[in-house]
Length: 452
Image (tube, rainbow, N blue to C red):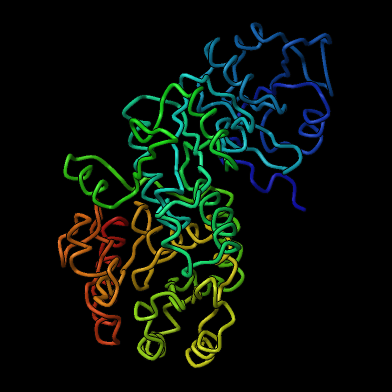
């Protein structure tokens, strides 16, 4: 491995004060080989006059020397950088040598963030997602955004999501026959728990097994969402009409985003499958498929998507098919990929954070109205077109249902930006192509303006 492949150019041939006297500092000195000018070494408790031929000084003495940058060769970067800033060092002049990764990065690099943090009880908002009034579905996404809005309003530091176990009340009895008990349990882990990872302020998650456990958490909580929630009389707070009300008041609702780790994982897939050629990668276009046995009239029209993907220029675009999680290896999906030359990416079907990361890293995301596509709708980073809003055969997707939930028929989702579109027509070839071409042109124009 080439040493200091990631050495910032700012440090080349500059005067550098090295903080640290252990093995990391010695390794740094041994392998630097004149790429920068080391003027001295300092440490919290330096007890030698020289190290590896370089003079050593106390921190106070070292701050009087002439240097351009400080490189900290220690894992205690957060504490050391704060100490250095307290005695006059500028943050932009402090760098961190990561011995195990053989690189130098900014002192406030994401790797420097504390992995273990405790929050004072009075600074935690406990958000109760009660399965006696809410489903184990992507409805939780709206709940998370509403909880975040309340957290910011209260000035709390973090959100702790509590999923309250379901009982055999009328609400849940009515759902029997739609999803099995095993699937319900699966969804609690795979959808509810994973979705919480998309809310940066969520630092706690509890999946309760009894009402008593939920009541105990409620008793100790100083800040609770929804307002006036109780285990005996739970409150549903996830419906889209509440998101629309916030946007009407000028508030933001799109708070979800992928973690840096998830983006890095997906980027590896994209780098391998869609490598840069002639200086640029192809534009990633995702197609999220709905192929469910539940309300099948809402499913994607395979023949229409096949026609669209066939004509998409593969020299410009890299289309990725995301199959329905329950039908990842269906004959329809395999045929769609085979007939269009598209890749099927199944990993995000089983990991919500990877799905969000892929959506964020893509040029445009396409799909019919379904749960996973609402990751795009509740993110400010995703460009998307969502088709087939209304399916009159089902109460939840009827025109009246949309009106009841605060939608304006023909309009976009709550808080949507110019690159986020709801198309109220079915996913036919002509509709998909015309809407894609229009948004594609808008994205290209925006990117050109940003580079000017």
